[in-house]
Amino acid sequence: MTMKKQEEKEPQSWFVRHEGLVMGPLSNARIRHLLLDGELELSDQISPDKQSWQAIGRIPGVVPLQLRADAGDSEAQAKLAAREQAEARDIEQEKRFPLAALAISLLIVGGVVLYSLWFGMPDAIDTPECATPPAPGVNWRNCLINDLDVGAASLAGANLNSAVLRRAKLSATDLSNADLRYVNLSHADLRHAQLQDAAMVGANLQFADLRGADLSRADLRFADLSGSRIDDANLQHARLGSALWLDGRSCGDDSIGRCEIATE
Image (cartoon, rainbow, N blue to C red; front, side):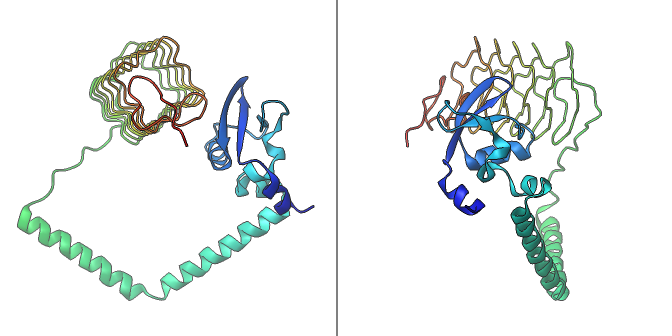
């Protein structure tokens, strides 16, 4: 039986057991994303029914093409090679039209210059200061900070938009009114953190410890809370529309203060 036929018969959603915690059901695409992001490992267990478990690495349909190729899968290697050839052809085609690209660039630059002369220069965007110590209002936008431990410092009103702060130690930290949109706080310690009125749209909170945290009025739409712990957390008036809940299921659009599981 070929690998293609095996993948066609595989379930489209799975339960996943990671570090003793079962979550799901998760789609094949979601599992592939978590593998590439390093949140899951090929040795983690997977099951369609919570009865029979096996390693993720044994199910080709949920393993990303890159990982399969690295493991010596000849079919995956062939697909990657074909993809690289196609990309090389695209690059070659782009090289054939440098004048067109140059003309477009000049038009864009000219448009910006004319706009600036007519309307004035736009306000400058604040430059992130990733080496700045933790303090209220600090700008860590897009920063990658390893082993963050703010101690007793406050991050109230801080700009952490799209920052990568995996496994950060933020227990009891004041993050009220902070910009946490699309921040990566997976596996972070956020016990008793103060997150009132925080903007957390699209935040990655996978496997984060939010026990006792104050999330009142926080905007958690589209956030990923799968695998996290929220015992005794305050979610009063928190917006949870389209967020991924602890078990990986999606919250309904009108979820406020609690996750109302979306119905298909």
